[in-house]
Amino acid sequence: MLVIRRVVIAIALLLSARDARGLTVLTAGKQALVTPARTIFRFSHDAALASVEAPTCPATSSVQIASSNAFPAPVALPCEKWKRRGGAYRYRDRTGAAGGVRDIVLGKGRLRIAVRGTTVTGPVGYVEVWLNVGDARYMGRFHNFRRNDGRAIVTRRPSRAAADGEAAFFATLLGDADRVDTAQASLERAIAHDPKDGRSHFLLGMLHLLRAGRELSDYAHASEVARDESALASRALDAAVPLLLDDTRVPGFRAAATYVDGVVHGDPIRRDLGLAQLRDAFALNPLFNLFDFVGVVPPTVPRTDPLYAEAMAYLSQSLATIGEACAGRDEVCGNVGLAPHNQGGTFLLFGDLFAKAGVLAGTGLDNARSFYRLAATLEGPAWRFRGLAQARLATAADRVAAYQDADPANDPGIVGSGAEACATCHYR
Image (tube, rainbow, N blue to C red; front, side, top):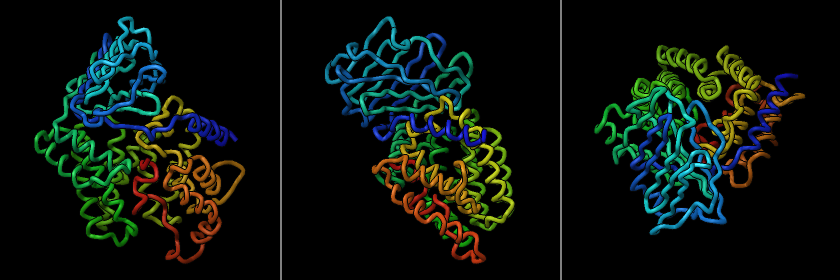
């Protein structure tokens, strides 16, 4: 079948993706300038750069400049161009023979990358740079723009509070340390300093959404904390959308927050608004925003509800085109971006969705058992939820049977709440 063939192609693309567990997210003193003539990225006074991997020979290194519109392949850098200078490392090649890269300074809290020309054209939802040194990957993403058009992309330097808040957010998201309180306090200070700081509004909303997810096991009987966190998430993401207009992912997260807020508060108006926003977001960015719809709607409705059928229709539509959609998008479809176990977490979710729909097995991949098998075998022992995936595979028939019987009280939960919230994909 054509659908299955395309899915197999997509899986092959995912398997080719590189690992992202060596990722270091840079947040402090970051600025970007992108024009047709030159591209410059700067980070300064970032504690994550106090100690860095040595890029000198025989190490391998590369630079990757990407955006919401494109994720081109890394450009390999000849190791002999790197020299150690005063406790830091410098790459110099005035000819820019390797992808236009002319100058890099790395170390002592700094990273500066200068490139002749660019592969990025605005407007973009975000622009980002990756410096890969051996197994280490240094990454910075830029969202707050002074200018964002076809002639130039110029970003604002974040406040110290914004940088600290982003660093604490990613430490929490990646499972390095639970710094939710520090992240919240810093992001709130950043917004008080600059109410137009869209990135801080967005991260604050995502932090509250994470907190709500950790508290949610029963949407019909949500705790007071879950209700409060969902309302705060919705408020912050409502503020972020008009400030990050070119980022097509933000409306999807806002929609998820609106829907959850409506469900946990028993507010049908908010719930229906969230559904409308979810549908609009899927149309805007089907590849990425699929997860907003299938991540929040199926856990809240019976398998016989038309909304569950709608979620499965979106999933089937995406699976039918995922091979084409994922081409050149390893950051979204593989494990190289900000979700080090994107593959395992995604397939675990897909398995749960097919299980609740009553599709245990089949000749292709569009069934619970096949996706559980992928989740259980694709990821290595480092994935904290590998045992969960293996248990799902072993009990797949029992899960489907529980959903099919007449007792909704014994229905298993869909992955993604409590300790699993965001963690199945994002924890290192």
